[in-house]
Each structure stands twice: as structure tokens, then as C-alpha cells.
Length: 178
Image 1 (cartoon, rainbow, N blue to C red):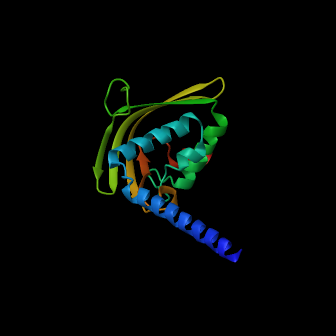
Image 2 (tube, one colour; image 1 turned 90 degrees about the vertical axis):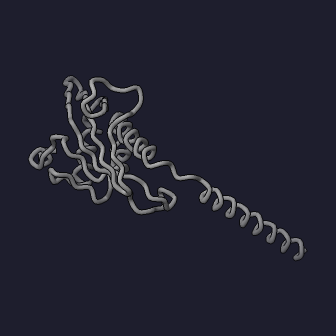
Image 3 (cartoon, rainbow, N blue to C red; image 1 turned 120 degrees about the vertical axis):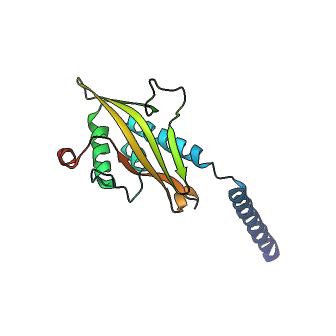
């Protein structure tokens, strides 16, 4: 009886070891997407977060050390996103390349990538339905992206995040009202 129990435990250990090796091999062989693709996905995730009014999805795109020229921090951005999520009935975001006349069929814009930093230039129009009042907010944004250190959330691979956004029109005084 003990011999069978020992054999079963041995088989379970071998099976678990095999699963761990397959998972590790998949991680090693799973190619990291190119930087441009990762940045496109980040911009699309942030846009989706605004349009679905998901503050957590938006903040997930923002680097912990976020700070822009207006003095806004990640915590300030979080409060602003929470306010938009609770007060806006609908949010629509239109992104075009800086200086372009109309929105392209796919997300195409000017992003210059340099190692672990990138800078993007976007013309963005945010339209917020505040339940009877529609606010249209055109912006010419300069977005600085950074590749963050590895973490369990990105399977220990660096991932891109927004380090700052300039040109949004929110200053310290307006932030205090939010």
C-alpha cells in the first residue's frame, strides 16, 4: 500500500515539474512585443479606460512617478479620473496625429522611441456628456512614456507607462476644484 502511495506522489511531483518547465519555457520563448506595439496597446487601453469611465484602467496606464509640467501627480490624475468616472454619463475620445485633419482608421500618431523612453504627440478631443451638458475639450498633447521596471503584473518584463502629459489644460488651480 505504501509503495503505491509513494509512486503516486512521485508521479504527481513529476507532473508538476513538467508543468513548471513548460510554463517557464513558454515564458522564455514567448516574444516580447515590439515597443511600438506595446505603446499602441497602452494608448488604446487608456482611451478605452476613459470611454468606459474606468478610473482603475486609466491609472493602470500611469507610471508611479508621474509628474507633468502643471505639477499634477499620479494621485491628482487618479482623483480627476474618479471624478470623470462618477460625473460623466458618457466620454468619447478622438485621437489624431498632431496636425492631422481627421481621425485615421487605426491609431496612428507620432511617437519617437529612444531606448526606455518615448515621446508622443497627439491631437485629442475629449467629449464629456455631463447629463444635459456636453463639454468638448480639444487638446494638443505631448505624452512622455517610460519603460517601468519588471513586476509580476507584466511577468517580470518591463512595460510602458505614461510618465507625463503636457498640453491638457489642467493647472494647479483647476486641480484644486476637482
